[in-house]
Length: 332
Image (cartoon, rainbow, N blue to C red):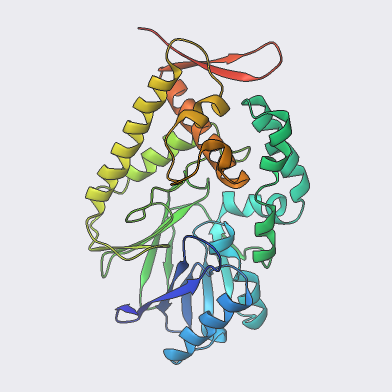
């Protein structure tokens, strides 16, 4: 699909995943093409990507720049494969995402242990924490590991000779997440930061910083005064009405805050206890029936909300005698 002259949307399938596909974007340049995100590494995904490139008269070797919005497998997984076939391709990502590559995709067992320890501190039962801590391990097979050629920090202008793309640092869903703004057509390539229907998971992680939800909401509002005609997200469909969508996402988190405060009530709770009592978009399943990865995501998102509320002066964090963490409402 040609979004605008010289800018194409390529839907790359994510097999056996509810998201369905990854929206990779291809942008024309004087010396080659720039790709935003790649999809994850499976034979089917790569084959479809090659077919879609061929349909517009291109091949993988025409890609000379790859910009990754963040290093989750569905965005980063094919980058190594593309670089193998197009050696002149230059890979760009934010510094924070680059710093996470080795721990996530090379020395991943140490990171898994740290996540298990963090989950234990937040109340995950001993019989569950190792399973939840390693719940993302299957995603490793969908990544061809490679490292960036250029590091981004936010504020850079990446030029293809035809289009200029401003790098906007938007932490939250991932600490080094970036969006890209193309002013000529007023296009915002939003990655997972803003999606038309799904609210991205904002998890507290051992690599996330101390207030990922606060970071997310700040970086969300940072985009409100940007002149945008269309938002080009990494999933679902292109949409209009950026500020209305920002308002909807903000209201979602406000409603979640109210729900959490009602669950806490008058006595301390840990994140596992709170998460198990919240409403989640997993129809037809009780908390006990959630797959490990969904339980882990729910707990880590709950911790993110609790830390946001703590920094906002709504709850206090209690370190129990056994080293575990609970949260209690601050009465005013």
